[in-house]
Image (cartoon, rainbow, N blue to C red; front, side):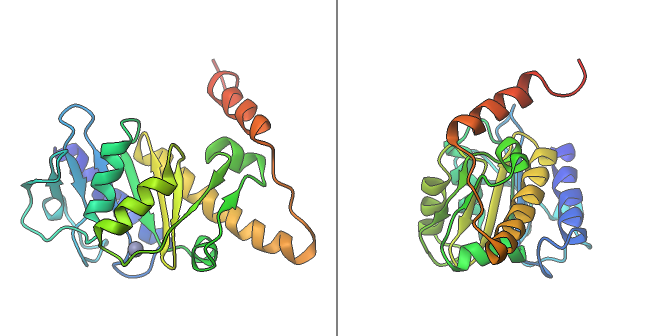
Length: 213
Ligand SMILES: [Zn+2]
């Protein structure tokens, strides 16, 4: 599990560096697809100071299998998403400014740029409100996430999911940038939403036709 602990430690430092969150807020996890063990950040620790042994390891049913620290209070959020999404192996929960503007006004973020359509999808919904760290928050988030790659937590922040950590970070970046563009675009006009059909075409293209062979 050493490799997976290190991935989460590095991701924590990266999250802090990219200003996706403040102080010790936000949390990260990865799943080892083989053992199905889930590595989650500890609760309230400075990401700059975290080492692999600070990470908490859970089995797929949410039982602690390693780690001495108290896990992130949002452990249920992470575990429930993995239980529902076999395609997801990395989750980043952050409190970035522009995405949170949508979360506090309980609005989703639609596909207004091609970049968003390709990397994130058709629309990111805002989950129904629940207190942080509760099972209700985890259930609401799973429901609003559906088969998408991100979800907003009402009055709280964002959750991005991917097949690996690199992809989850890319989704986080594009979601936050799109939220900023959406706010700015509304100040000078009416942003147009890309159709579901076009989003699908762009995603298929990205899978098969983009980049080098
Ligand atoms: Zn949070």
